[in-house]
Image (cartoon, rainbow, N blue to C red):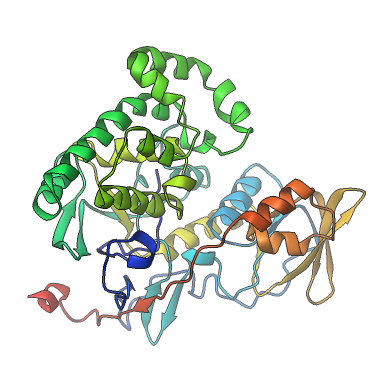
Length: 408
């Protein structure tokens, strides 16, 4: 399963305001910078292949219009094109990728957002959903593998390794035996549920009633088999898979502040929210992947921009169109149906089948005519808190210098 976060893959710096580790408030979390030289010709989402001030590509209509070229929009547009739909993807900015885009300043290439990945090389129903999309598009992303990162905490600085036993050693040395016992308790509760989580392909998991169609009905036989294998305790716990992970944490009485904050951190790395906003199925799947022998994390060799480039190539390979620097002013609705979009320059582009918005829920609501969206949807948007702001500190290294020599 893909794990994507704003944290660097080489170091974690905890923000005391977000995770209550009692860290000094002046700590700034740096984001990993790419390393490049003047001769580096690697394409990124800020490279010449995709950073073009595109004129409108082709006719002003499509089967499906997709708004926003973040990872979700690119996957959506790519798969639509793969299955012979005429699709056009509109992006306001000069580079695709959204939060996952890379950018270049004076020959230095930087990653801006996602930095923690796993499962890119996996295949089959249980594979990383992003790997499945790339596979469908005939694309791949070369990755480096690793199993540890540096952690900086008030309790100490240490190299944290994923796997079944290493973190227990860190907890004993830097926190307490009580934290070790609580972590074991969590693993003993979560890992038996993994059979049910693994029975559901990641692409089928969703947080609304649509899960009855994408998961429960389609994969009922494999779910039933996993329940039998797990026995009564595991099967009872598996009923919580589509509930927030915080309910599992609370149900087993975890009290240690470090353990609870670490769980919130893992949820944040996976889903961008804490445990009360992350599906248990996602976390159970991640625990099964991270805390098994021989597990590894991955990082694209050419940064997150390589992921974006691969998705763009795949979409365009099947005839999908990408229009950068193209701002959608509003979605045009007639008789309760989205029939196209109006661009900022006044041009109308017709959608023969659908309009898909990969913009945020707040921006999507602004694109729709007043009172078109159901009140329940509007109320949900108004009640959904936005993520807090954070600072990125980018650091560049000259590729001619040996990185290992910088830390001797």
